[in-house]
Amino acid sequence: MWKNSPPDTEEVMAKVRAVAEQKWKESLAPRNVNPADATFIGWRTYVSDPFPLTWPSVEGTLVFYALARGMNPGVLRDGEFVGPTWARITYSAQDKTTELTLLDVRLEPRGVQGVRPLRQEELEILKLKPLDSLLGPRTAAADQKLKSYYCLQRSLGNIPSEAVTAHTAFFEWLDWKA
Image (cartoon, rainbow, N blue to C red; front, side, top):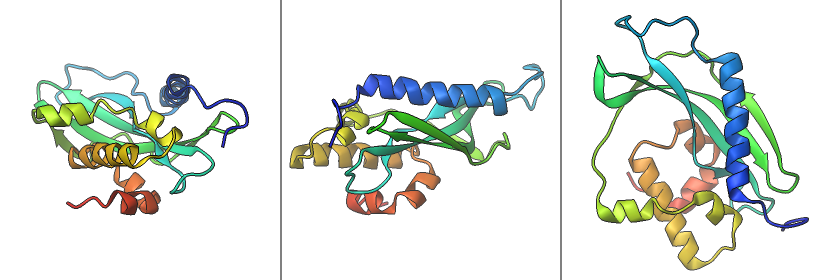
């Protein structure tokens, strides 16, 4: 599958995050905001877990989504404001290139996402590094861990709806039930 050697997953994540951070600074990062303003939201960008461009993946092309999340402790203490999924970042493991496509740059709250304590078995599931699993060898055990990871992430609200829509074959394979 690889021309040379398999990609270093830490390097991949660093590259994808750097591309997102740079475009965030250029296109979306709020400027001249006053934290004392009642409507202030401290926005930041967050990069999703990877999703295979096709499933089953044969060429190692992955898609990440850049999301906007915001805080205002004076208004919301037990969650965060959910902003737009503002970019789609495609990474080719074959030639180690990234491509960012802007989706929505209107930085405004679209809702609120709360938090809840995680059970011990959920904490164990979240130890999985999905990029390693998606780029590594496929086994029944690895597939089951991957399914558990993505199903938990979806139930926690950490998977953008754009990913579910764009990667239907992958989500059908997950067989996630609401």
